[in-house]
Length: 82
Image (cartoon, rainbow, N blue to C red):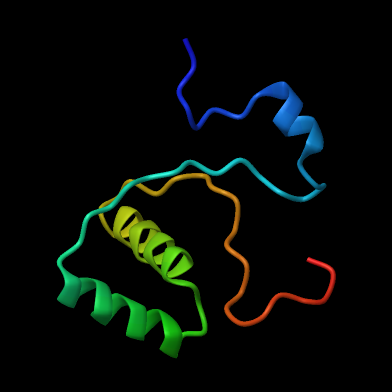
């Protein structure tokens, strides 16, 4: 039995080149925490999702649990065509 977020071979074949599999996660936050994170993400020219991923990667590294994950795109607008 597969999880709802698993990528099927059909979906994998239709994914544009350069796109990697992503896992979904429902995260419930206090509204004040959400607002603070959203402002911080905007200051760094990142989406809230990308900013949370950066923070989680930094926390993993600091805890000695660094993972081999694909690099995150630099902050700001993506180049045309992406």
